[in-house]
Image 1 (cartoon, rainbow, N blue to C red):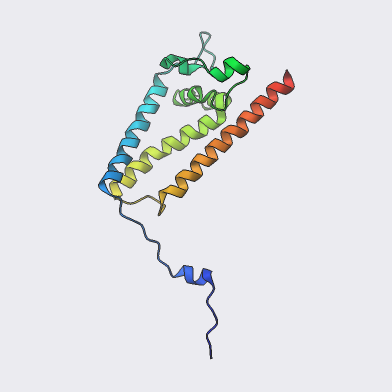
Image 2 (image 1 turned 135 degrees about the horizontal axis):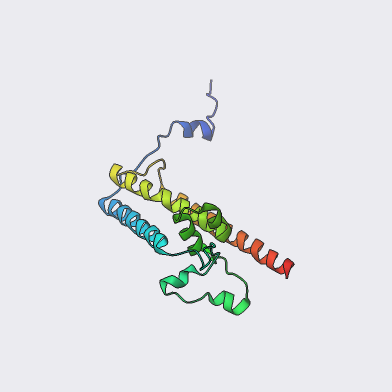
Length: 166
């Protein structure tokens, strides 16, 4: 008697998941990235995302960092896909999530994602292994694709609304 062939899914069940030990260099970089993110959020706290009347702004707070006005807005009169991200981060760090969502909802989601990365990086560095995943590259690529996609979709909606309302 010939045994029935084993399907690929049955074979895969018996393959152990290998979780590679992170090198010292990778662990150090995880700590450096966590520190850089903390600095990013400290800068967001230092920015004043409110106008002179105390109303939350929707864009333009990057000017407080010495950056120029958005050239895309200057040339087209329309916001660029990242318009409002700095303001969104600042409003979230000032405890105003609704205004943060109004400024740029993708910026709010990105800020929350990056906030979650701080402890994840530190725990992964301390353990010497990735926390909850076996390989970081597909997750990182996926996150980049998702956030760029969301930014473009949000931008299309904002531009569409501006176009429809004149």
